[in-house]
Length: 88
Image (cartoon, rainbow, N blue to C red; front, side, top):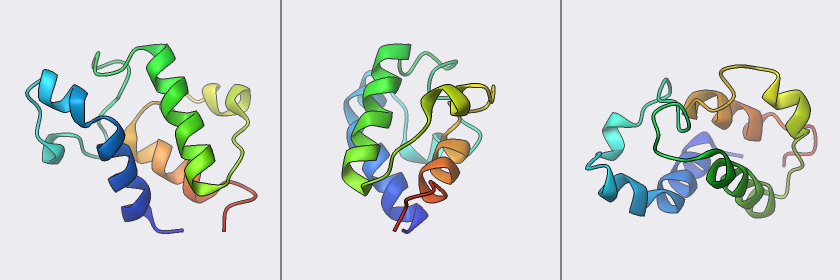
């Protein structure tokens, strides 16, 4: 599974929010926090994770992942999906 494919899927899913917040994709780098920035609320973030699970056929232990304070940063989300135990 390619990080670029995961990143592109995330950008596609949040494109309306990027427009609303007047952000360019380049501004949403690996350190960008999708929730703490206000770009996504907690429910929208959960929906994004669910969409990622479905798209990339992985299952994330959300409770375990949420223990990491940086879970909502783009870079950490990419790593989480790419390294999911059942990732292909």
